[in-house]
Image (cartoon, rainbow, N blue to C red):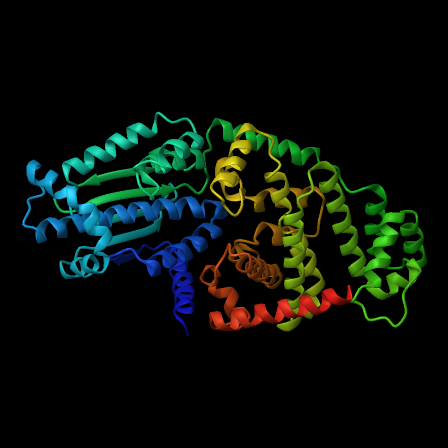
Length: 499
């Protein structure tokens, strides 16, 4: 079992401990790539289970800053001790700080060993509280008065900024350095709905304590509420499925219905007729001769696939007519659908393959409305995304709006009276352990397919995946997952040649 596999298993186990109402404590002397991977993996799972996965980037960035600052404070003690300087003498403190920054940058390995030698460490405590998820960062040295003064000044400075755009232009490119900084931390807390009041720093004569509480129910700022209201209104105003589609769905569920009656109804809609014939003649259905008649096409694809086609064609038509066509989202959904079907077939869930493919195709419906939010906030978020070369604006949108695209998609699916398994799949495609036992297999299949697509697009990693999901598919390590990924990609290439 490789290190990523151990990490995946460990972080899933720790998340289970937190879910059971217990506290976990993790200590480390230095912040390195392994610690970064651990924190990313752990909070990917914790936040997904709380249905706030969009806070992952915000929370991990803040924690990275807090932990780095705590380690820097510990390193400062090592430096001053090594140079026989008294930190609490103003003159010696100022003299030592002139060379401290270059010292910590150019002597990282030495600093790490010295921190271990003097047992200067940082402990992260995590547990559920009445107010939300409580995270405490403790380093075993007290705050220097100069450090406390700087922190207080930056917290005060944060109150002078109105939004992220000011912070990005005035802080990120300034002498604050590459880290998020206290100012940006406070702005992220404010605009994410977590709230600045959730953040506290204190110290006694021996230790420094930084606490952060992530509310399970966010309390967005005023502008967020307006955008949420706009999104809910958008969902309310979405058209329902056309009458002929609703009638066809009803016919497909009627026990004594004839195929001729269904085909006659489909033939009244030229666009739908073309879609049915196209599906029947695709590489997914092995036929010797090309099918030219709708009734024969229905015999080939079956009523279950016809129902799926009715849902997907109607959903896509409504979304594309009302909003700008989001090709990247649909491309991702198509790929997730194909991956989910392959996973279902490979691991003995063939009976679920069609349903998994349909759930995969619709899992990101909510992103379309999320990214269509018409507001000034959305415009500058898009600008930040472009300037900072971020992979997607979705995370910033969700942070600013306080709603996950999963929740938005769930509301759309419920409005359209889609099957319960689709609603569950959309709702829990980032939080599979939250789904009901009845739909566990199909949600796990879509969740894994979505992760494989995201790994391929470099927006996810193996150790983000829930261990319980890997266990269901008997995937023991990253190598086995990558082998599965390679198999699916190869199959997609082969199938694309025949479509």
